[in-house]
Image 1 (cartoon, protein in one colour):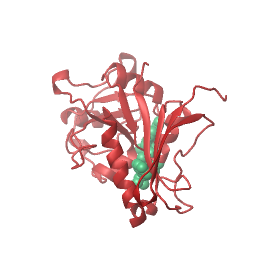
Image 2 (tube, rainbow, N blue to C red):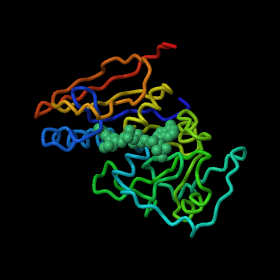
Image 3 (cartoon, protein in one colour):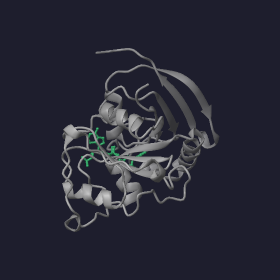
Length: 242
Ligand SMILES: NC(=O)c1ccc[n+]([C@@H]2O[C@H](COP(=O)([O-])OP(=O)(O)OC[C@H]3O[C@@H](n4cnc5c(N)ncnc54)[C@H](OP(=O)(O)O)[C@@H]3O)[C@@H](O)[C@H]2O)c1
């Protein structure tokens, strides 16, 4: 396969929602613990999140003063991605789908106590919409970046580069709803790993895929955990519904 194997790993409500207050209710605590445990058990080479999830989980809205950084001229035709020499790359990655370069990182690795996230080498996936000074900032921080698209991230191209430039073979896709939808529509999800909490979400909360098309999956494994939490693993079937 010319791209990493993708497992979409999420906690969800009985009614298939993945965002909102229900995630922080005591009834969901056990499901969240199991979610992190399964994340670690996958031993993936890294994880992908959308810009909103990365901001909420790791950067907390901080942003650098770009006037301090030299703009970098990016030429799509010359495929000017920024990668570090192999000796400076780790073997565990946090891949941020950040089309306009809105995430402010204070380090080139994720700072988190959980071994499923902490110390992951950050990789930014960008589009042509990015401020060239943001590239100067990323380079000064030694944060690798790849370009994949003009205004929206071309998921297939991004994954091709992650495999062929960065050498990544498998990744967890860990939300949120919007980025999951982009992957689903591009047929880039090989497995679903769904931890279902015994709770119904609010009507304003977002579904597993913000926008989706019809695709077929087969149930590979199902397990009941304590506190009425269920884990389901599905594998994608190669069928075309277009
Ligand atoms: N239940 C779970 O397991 C779980 C896991 C993770 C997150 N979450 C929840 O999910 C929520 C956030 O999810 P969300 O759906 O709002 O946002 P999200 O998917 O985290 O991020 C969406 C943003 O990512 C960028 N993006 C991603 N893919 C793109 C593509 N192919 N092309 C262009 N832009 C792309 C865009 O950034 P710009 O806006 O900068 O253009 C887009 O608005 C949080 O509340 C979090 O708690 C839940």
